Length: 148
Image 1 (cartoon, rainbow, N blue to C red):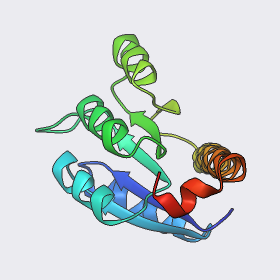
Image 2: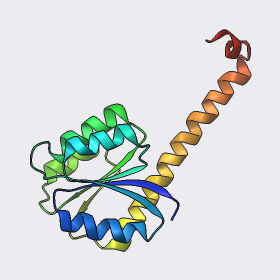
Image 3: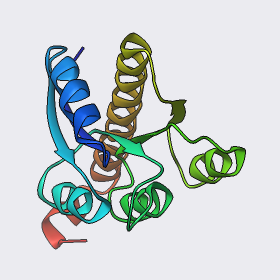
Image 4: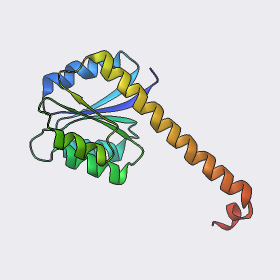
């Protein structure tokens, strides 16, 4: 896997420790948070590629955290993860822009594959944005110097 900047958000410390260790072995730079507020602070401080986000957490729930992430860091991909699945939360998360929705316990190989796919999607979107910016410069080179 690429060197993915990954944030795992879950209120279960044991899950965080185990999952972050397994993903770090797969060339991910892993950050962790036990609540939504800490996760959002990390998102503001680091250029996170992929977030693995628990749906059920005390305080700010996963769906609310997802919404805030997508408002401010719209290119970061979010994989929702829960042990208490409901169809409503899955549909709501996907409508708000989650990349995918997985059940706990999740096979680590499946999770790693989803992280890889999510990272590739983010990279593809970043490339499209860069191509659009370059196209704009080529079409209107004077704007580069005029500040338009």
